[in-house]
Amino acid sequence: MKSPYYESDAALSQYLLLHYGTEADIAPDGFVPKKARSFPLRCVTDTLARQAIPENARALDVGCAVGRSSFELARCCGEVIGLDFSQRFIAAARRLRKSGGVEVDLIDQGDLKRRVRLAVPSDIDSSRVRFEQGDAQDLRKDLGTFDVVLAANLLCRLRNPSRFLDRLPKLVRPGGTLVITTPSTWKQIHTPRANWIGGVTRDGREVRTLDGLKDFLEPAFSLRRCLDLPLVIREHERKYEYIIAEATVWRRAGRT
Ligand SMILES: C[S@@+](CC[C@H](N)C(=O)[O-])C[C@H]1O[C@@H](n2cnc3c(N)ncnc32)[C@H](O)[C@@H]1O
Image (cartoon, rainbow, N blue to C red; front, side, top):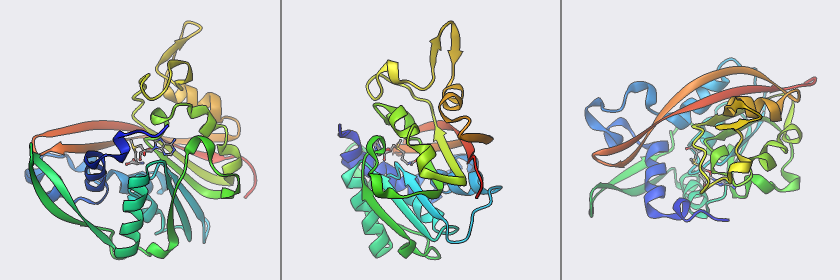
């Protein structure tokens, strides 16, 4: 089922800003702490820093939104697919790939808006990246296999996250890297409680998302690292959402 939110003007401008905005665009005067800036960039740089990525690696960015992490993956991977359910997000990502930039109206207050131009960093080879619309819970069978799979802040937006998690052992090549980040915002409106990966008590035991992920992913994957990745989403000039995503880095078992 399509989320009307991720097809809306508000979401499009918020995610374009989160992905491509400069500090001046997002929050002048340093209101956003340094460690919470450039989240889609850090999803790639901070998590893959210690991973061995083969030459000409293939990467998949599931729930890529407007595509910044996909472009960042192209710095170390020869082929990147960015996939998202939102048609508007994918259309914007394709526009950015084609023309290198887009103009967007940011809400300052009420009806008052400010037009800014946002751009893909010019030193990225965008020809390595393509974007497609698709459902993480029903990925097309001929997607192939990948050296790197990134799913940033996707899990708790899925109706049935297990359908995505179950596909991962077939999607990630032996020795490959899986990065999952999540704020664990488990809500019935997105995911029926019975399908929550964490944030529940089962058989008298508190199950957090990390516990649930281990249950799903081990032993096909081994956990390499956990790190906190803060981010800030700007709603308007005086309202921001501060999130601390939990990032986990996993290695697919087997020989490379
Ligand atoms: C919270 S946003 C995160 C976007 C991006 N990864 C980031 O970190 O900025 C969740 C994204 O998942 C996408 N999404 C939601 N349900 C999806 C599904 N079933 N398949 C693929 N993408 C989905 C939304 O359109 C949205 O772009």
